[in-house]
Length: 97
Image 1 (cartoon, rainbow, N blue to C red):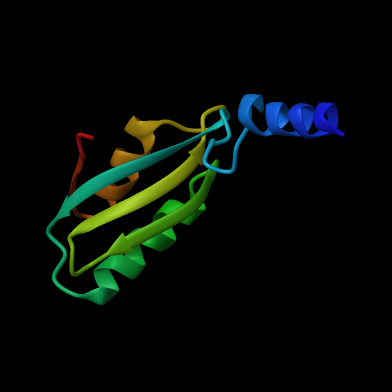
Image 2 (tube, one colour):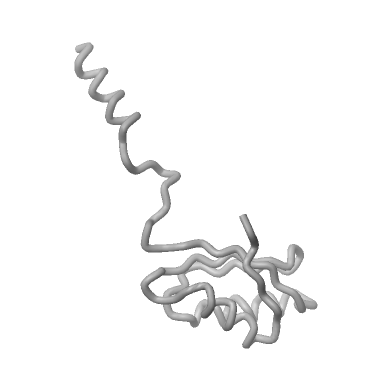
């Protein structure tokens, strides 16, 4: 019985993947956005980003003047995301961690 408990604990401690690990094929980008004057601006940016191939999540927060975008590394990148926001008429910069 002691061996079963030890093996189980070992699996829990040594498991290479945990719930907190992220998918290595995706990345989350946090941006600051200047130029938004209302909630409709945030909705417009969100809609434009969701049309971009590879974007799986786009949350734009008007009150914080920021956004969180999750995307597939194989399909898009930070430059394309920033360009999409700027084509919508706003200034976007990547937030530093």
